[in-house]
Image: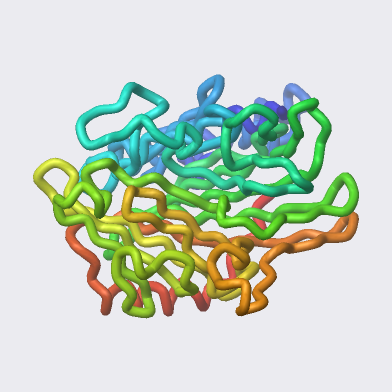
Length: 341
């Protein structure tokens, strides 16, 4: 990892301080750009990041938002994830012991993740014997400001350590009138030769909602899609967005995942379950349709080719507001995204 990754630049500094930094840079022969990159995070960042040995903490207005953990089980994850009012909106098990309403099942459902169940025949989805591992190779960027940004490069390796492919993922954190949001963009590249993301429901961009939110807990949990489908009827169906809402503590909260029109497989199909799994999967058509439909969801890339997935996760207070969500989706879907170095 490069030193610039460990202490990211912030968006605004007092001019006097920057002037001093420039003089020090000239005197020492170090570039001003490098000095800027090594400045510590300050409270001037409304959405701030703090670099630790194995994770990056994100806060918003000084309050906890989430932690990007470089490795949990077999992959990078986000956990815990706090909604606008402070509640944890994803399951805490297995990162900590299960609490009320949580089941000790699906140990690979680690809060917030991106993997797939069949990559050149290797499963990166589960943690059964023979599974693959996604290893962070570099923390490229971790910086705060009006929004915060984390960029990493990751190697996908089989059980013997052989590299299969690589990804570059960009996570941006912020908030608006709808709630807190996390933008997730990943570019997967066939860096080692032909690459096949196989046709299986076990994928790909996923969350496991807080235990009390799940529909099966019968406390008021509800799944609803942009197409008007409810609860179990949303499974395997395409939609622009899906919302999973329910109670956490004394408050009703929710998570909406939006699929961008430029994302591979748009509108994505949803591997979303009433027991709390909430995943967008553009590859699982064989499982989502009957054999008679003749659907084929696998993606085959030649050496050097890539594909991009882009999702927005909205963490909101209260039940789903369809009108505001549609408006927010329309605005976000017109954005082109950013290339961040």
